[in-house]
Image (tube, rainbow, N blue to C red; front, side, top):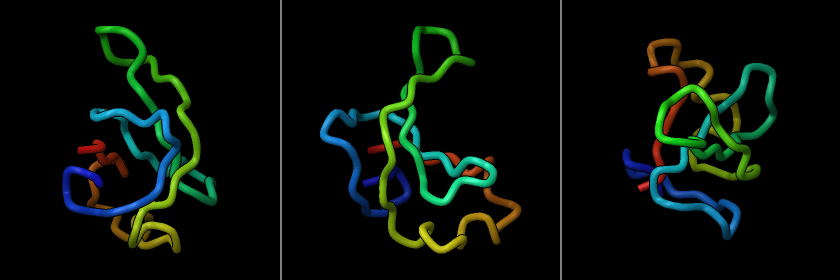
Length: 72
């Protein structure tokens, strides 16, 4: 579940604080984990399914903050 209440499926290695992203040109959301104490470097955790962003709904909302969601 994301911090804004969206439900989904993700790799079993997912942890609280991982970030769900929709990359430009990507067909599915991806799960990333910040690598190290300082931002800027992220590790790929895997693909995921998240309600209401699988069919381009998130991309249609241009005001959304960079398409980032934190796993709650």
